[in-house]
Image (cartoon, rainbow, N blue to C red):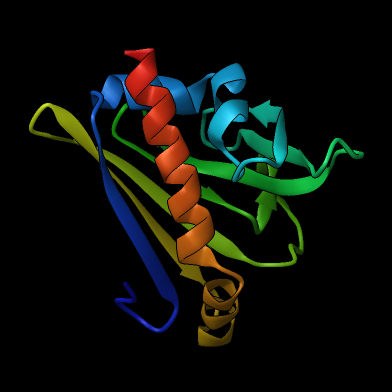
Length: 156
């Protein structure tokens, strides 16, 4: 669902508590298991959950060499409630020029016995937002959220 011409949103209910979903996000060995759509493999290089902390992952297709996936900087962290990161900065607030500039606002809200997991993704321009959507934002992010849900529901 598009709410503005520079914003993409996706949301799902996960049958696990916000604390459990946060644990799946906040521990590198857990994040590596669901962060990239299978069968692509993920390697977590950095996951420093504090403002200014680095977030970096690599990906490998078909058992090949690991290549860059995400290089970002956390802007805001409220454990089990919200995280904000951007691809326009690297660890320590260092400016970088990513292939796709975005800021992701991820929220974990208690809903019934589960968690409403939402991602609000802001882009610098309508063209970048369209590009991200055309590259499969809803399918890709949707797949990873489904993988997160399956992982978190087993983690409980």
